[in-house]
Every structure is written in C-alpha cells, then in structure tokens.
Length: 338
Ligand code: NAI
Ligand code: MG
Image (tube, rainbow, N blue to C red; front, side):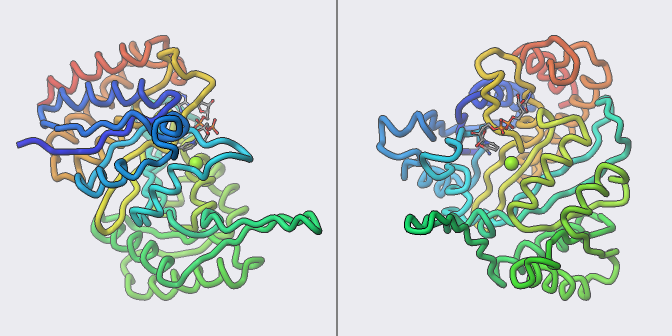
C-alpha cells in the first residue's frame, strides 16, 4: 500500500529541503504517492493569478495530509501569507512544535524537552487590519474566540495526557490584554481542573522569554495564542540547535500539514547549504501520525547517529556537508534500521 500525500516544496530553500526529505523517506521503505504542486506563493501568481490556487487546497482536502516546504511572504506589502491562509482555510487550529534536545547537537542548553502548542487560526494573525487615511492610524485586531481557545487548550492537555508528559504552562499577557489573553488564561485554568495528574501553571509572555533562556528544563508543554506561539517557538528552536533542526505540524480535525518552523531562508537559498533536518523531523511526525512507528523510529535513530558521529553536518551545525550530502548519508543510515 502507498500513502497519497500532497507535496508542496515551496520556495527559497523549500525545494532543496523537500528533495532531501523525500529521499530520506524513500529509505524507510514506506511507500508514498506524492501529489506535487510546485507553484505556490509568488511563483503561482503568474500562472494562476493567486498565490494560493484553489487546486492546491483541493489537493490537500483530497489527500488529507500534506508535507510542505516554506513559502516566502512579502514583508510590509503584497499578498496575505499563503501559510496563514492554508491554516485558516483548512482549519488547522493546532500548530505543534516539539523543541527537544537531540543527542549529538551541541548547544549550551541541556535536556530541553518542550512541546509548544500554538493556536493557529486566530489572534493577531486574524488578518483584521485597517488604515484610517484621515488620521494616519493603523489598526490590527487580535480576535480570539472562546471556541477557538478551548479547542487548542484541550488539544494540548489531551496530548500531554496521552503522551505521558507532566506539565502544562499557559502563556499570556492577561495583565494588559484583559479580554483576549484574559479569556485564554481563564479557559486554560478551567481546563486544568479536569487534568489533576498534570502540573499546571501560567506565565506572562515577557517573563516566559526570560525563563526559557535561563531554566528551560522547568517547562514541558506550552499552550498559547498565535503570535506568542510563533515567537516562542523560534526562541525555543534556538535552545535546541536552531531553526535548521526544529519540526512542526499544523493539525485540524480533518487535515494535517507537516512543515518545519523555519521560513524560506533567502540568505542561503539555492546554495545547497540548508539543513533539511527540520523538514525531515516534520516528516517523522507525519510518519507517527500515519501510524508508521517503525519507520519513524528508524528515522529518529539514524538522525541521532548522524549527529553523534558529526562527520556530515550542514553549515548551521558547524559542518561542511551540502544539503544533498547530508540527506544521502542519512538515508543510508535509515536503510540500515528498517
Ligand atoms: P527564516 O526561518 O527563513 O530564516 C531565519 C534564519 O535562519 C536565516 O539566517 C536562515 O538562513 C536560517 N535558517 C532557516 N532555516 C534554515 C535551515 N533549514 N538550515 C539552515 N539555516 C536555516 O526566517 P526569515 O528570514 O525571517 O523569513 C524568510 C521568509 O520566510 C519570509 O518571507 C517569511 O515570511 C517566510 N516564512 C515562512 C514560513 C512558512 O512557510 N511556514 C515560516 C516562517 C517564515
Ligand atoms: Mg514563525
């Protein structure tokens, strides 16, 4: 049997890390029937008149699962982020980002084991912006719904319970944003009552940033609103080896899109310098989602081996291997474990 999955290589370093990931997945022996859509974002506009063509959405609705590379969003102008639109249109409300120390990756922070659950469809990403020309005032609405908050909070608590994690921290700014962040905090406090086996606390976002770089080991699951989750997950990535190694998944009730935390990295695009580990680990999450535990474990073991060995690492990890070389060596090791 083979899994029919939508493959969106994206742009920037996206195509390079996607090729690498497809090669490594092939070594697991699990068969995939990829439904590829190369054109997404700026490179879709010429052909389809939109950065997010309807057939891409339809493809994900059909396959239910996608593996996705990063897509560039113009800064301060231009089209609305394709990534945000995908998450909203497919109602992928849970953005799950594991930031766990990987044996072999040297960082000043030891034994970090964070799972970040970021609300993925609302908050300051709602896209509710306006400009008052008369007074030159810009507004951005952080719309947060009770239903939207409840489902990400309950996703986090259920995940913690079913994966034997021990602690949940809700991150907010309820001292200032009393209605939006305040509601999110209150709903998390209410939910915690149903999970007496889990330790629970809350932190204000600015303090949380400090706590995470001083004592990250004290935290385990973090649940928070959209923008705070975006920022905290890049920070947490920095604790465990950087954006080159941290995976992510966008999960809803019907569909799931697996993509790394990082963006299109225009500074290194097209040079075979990108570390594909982040997308490869997103693919590992996808394998687990599909129930392909043996293949996922083989991939994980091979990653630990290649990092512990240290001979074929990419530039971000202090090595000189190209994206392709890293992928080839990793694929060889994966094949040894399946
Ligand atoms: P970025 O994550 O693309 O890059 C930040 C820094 O990390 C750069 O120095 C980059 O070289 C490095 N880096 C990122 N991934 C790496 C990898 N796999 N291997 C080695 N080094 C890596 O963030 P930036 O520069 O802020 O954003 C660039 C573009 O990406 C923007 O247009 C942004 O909107 C888009 N973006 C897209 C995302 C998505 O498609 N889900 C997520 C984040 C940003
Ligand atoms: Mg981000």
